[in-house]
Image (cartoon, rainbow, N blue to C red):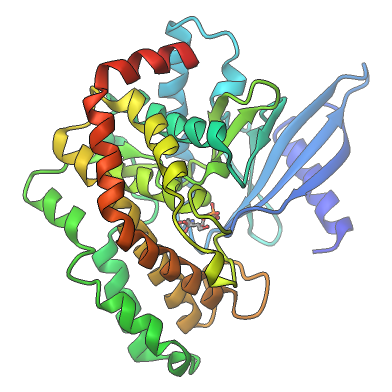
Length: 385
Ligand code: GN1
Ligand code: MG
């Protein structure tokens, strides 16, 4: 899209949502593999500056955008109520806000049929891609608190915006099908990766199996817990708002914990090409785990608690299978920023999963130690945030 076209869309969105002032500047947000995100700044006649987040929702991935918006609205309203009754003054920095048009709708449809929405901009905050210990703790804490805040939200009110999103057995079945179809003739390049992943098929159904046996509860979870989905206070570095609520759905605590570890505790980027750099940092894992379990100690069942490390490995294997499937399908789902990007990503996640396998015992020990310190951790958490 040309800059001219982009500016013209921004202006139509501003008009549709009655945003005050004139467009002053914009920034392209480069993270995200699905939607397109921009920050815009406006200035009104009195000189007041306002910032917003504009986003084009990928409606090939989210086939029912209205349901995505309804979920996010329901969940944020619930969290707002909680914060208000706790006397919170800084609501707009703590909970993502979705703007609505006068008719109540959340989207502006462009001439091309795209779905554009306006979200709040979290002032004086920063988004972090590479986490140090404080950010690791804060990331864990923010997603643990998110689950706690929604632990009394009626999960049946949520739409399944992407059905079976973290149903790992189904993801593996889909990978198998794509390998059989071999739509773009890439299968020959990925036999080793396929073989490794499919050798884990007996293991990856663990969480689904436990749920079926009545041992693992469904909760309202975030489902995309990368540390860059938490906005941190630019100065104090405490977590403010959890963002990217598109995949909030019923799911398992282990998936949220697992995905947070998968992303933030990898010693390399999610798409690192030099696999010798890829590994699970156990010290980082410990920090993130401390943050995550603190707000959830009185909520998680014992079974849930001890499946958290399995969530780490399962979600990593799942994402590897999703990247590999997309490579086999001809890159139709994730945005690719370089040639063979999906293959690079899949290989990186596989290298990470292999390292995690060898560290499963230590991951479990760290959690066991945390469970023993239950009371103590709760106190520490209250002091910290
Ligand atoms: C996608 O676009 P982003 O970064 O929010 C994907 C997640 C993956 C992630 C991997 C709807 O999230 O499931 O874990 O890429 N989102 C969707 O970086 O598929
Ligand atoms: Mg996301």
